[in-house]
Image (cartoon, rainbow, N blue to C red; front, side, top):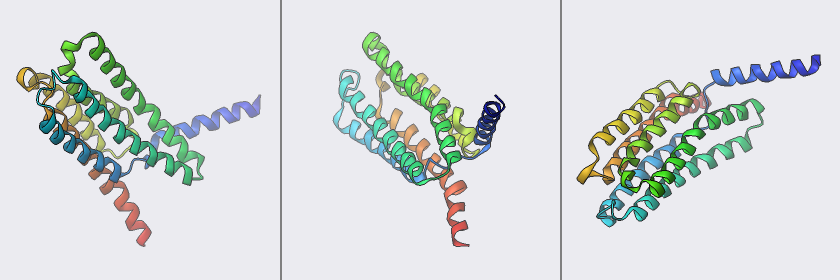
Length: 207
């Protein structure tokens, strides 16, 4: 029993240490690429999807595809780093970060499914709701990330609110209601990751 209690205490201490540690599994390059992909998708939508409310299937296919590629690229990056890391502590931080962010992804997927299948007249709200959910996911994980990520999360929530208020009627499902917030937000996140983590790591390696 004493051994079991000791193991439980060690596990709790490791979890507390993980919460106080800065997670380095998110890398600037994949995040920046996802921002560029969002802007490219907005250009593609403007060119090929003239009436997104009447063409909801290609609209959703485009943006869900962008989200899947972006999340997949980041997941592969995290998986590769976990494979090369021999530290169980680093892996526990990665799992904690994933557990904190993942609920917002699931909520976004379920919300999209419900609106598309049971309340199609409300799908104009999706860009704003997606932005708010990403912001909430970042708020959930920002304690594991550089502190400046807090402001990027706030940007997503505010842009989502503005989108719900403005991007309606003739502006509903505008390509830039998605392209600008996600492009700027992801590029800002990449800049924060690079200047606060990767740049310092590169300088440390040179010393």
